[in-house]
Amino acid sequence: MPFSREPQVPGTLDKDGAGSPEADRFGGLVHAVAQDRDRTAFAALFRHFAPKILHYCLKLGADRSTAEELVQDVMLTVWLKAASFDPAQATVGTWVFTIARNRRIDRLRKEMRPAPDPDDPAMIPSSLATPEETAQMVQSSRQLQDAIETLAENQSEVLRRSYFLEQTHEEIAEDTEVPLGTVKTRLRLALSHLKRSMRDKA
Amino acid sequence: MTVPLHHPDDQLLIGYASGQERAGKSLLVATHLAYCPDCRRRVASYEALCGNWFEELPCAGDDGLDGLLDRMDGLLTAARTPPEPAPIELPPIEPVAAGRTCGRMVPEPLRSWLPDAIDTPTDDGSWREISKGVWLSGWERTLSGTTIRLLRMASGAPVPTHRHTADELLLVLRGAFRDEYGTYGLGDVAHYGDGTDHYAFGASEEDCICLFLLDGDLIFLDKDGNPL
Image 1 (cartoon, helix red, strand yellow):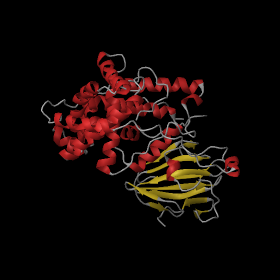
Image 2 (cartoon, rainbow over the protein chains, first blue to last red; image 1 turned 135 degrees about the vertical axis):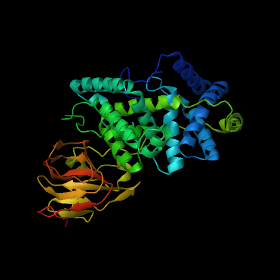
Image 3 (cartoon, rainbow over the protein chains, first blue to last red; image 1 turned 135 degrees about the horizontal axis):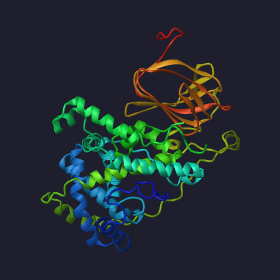
Image 4 (cartoon, chains in turn red, purple; image 1 turned 120 degrees about the vertical axis):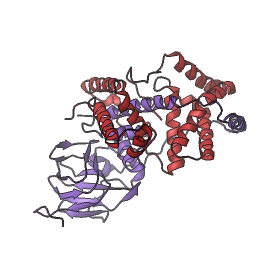
């Protein structure tokens, strides 16, 4: 789950962020599911997201029947947890992605995914940062957003394949018909492009 | 300083956000996130990036999922919204321990993994002294190929020179330590690549205690730099 309940920096949402008609439509559907247990709204969410969840799980190595079970599992979570969706934190697409990610780690890897607990009193809240630190964080967050948006197309593609589809460098080279060395170079360039937006190390 | 200064690489943060990173290093990243509002924001940005990639996946028309939607109908009826989870019961902190640690507990998700409070006495058998003033915890876990332990350094005590064959990661849970690159305090992460020799020593009045992750072997070196 995204870290709900923490104030989010404006401009950190993805390109279909809050306010776009598409985001409002899906946000409205999730709201209808949460408030009214609206099955028509659920069916509309299912038709949009189920094929994506299926595709995602198949790409990550699930067989067809496991992938279908995962689709069912993720969509059932959407039905049950609709009230916890916060449009100020993430788009519906990102929220569904985080559910799908957690479920497939459980199911396909038989691993649990360690995550901080937002209710843990030992967690350091962002409100504890000094004004200087907060200003720096806002800036670093904007810089990262800029860095993500200005990634070269071929570098973004290598990141997507490597982290989102979990392909090895060799698989990426074969699928995209690019020499292995070029794949490694692009990945290195992409990561250093993102890293440049990290605030200065002390 | 209230927030960490030394963060995990973006490689680890994006791997954690996408789910590509395995459980061992994810435990360290997630525990750092509990200390670091800045990295929580970075991970949220990377989750949004993955969300965009997820949205770009095809909306296949003929994928036979209509039948699945029909079958879910019964599930939706049967599924009741689970009751609100009961408030988490925190393990009581003994007054003595609380005084010694300024009341700061190790945050989740690590706290649930640890068997005891981390600042147990060093002479109770739960710590193994590897050189004067430096201990490794008896507690040890292997998670997705990564060995996880606690490393404890008394003030000024140097960790013997060592080399490792793969990644070594440290996350400070108490006190501070120094290496050739700087000083690491609460919540800070130090990441050493394979094949590097480096030193570290406790740099706080209280013992420095770190979460210590190792992918490969740890080789201690003698004073001439030869493996022991």
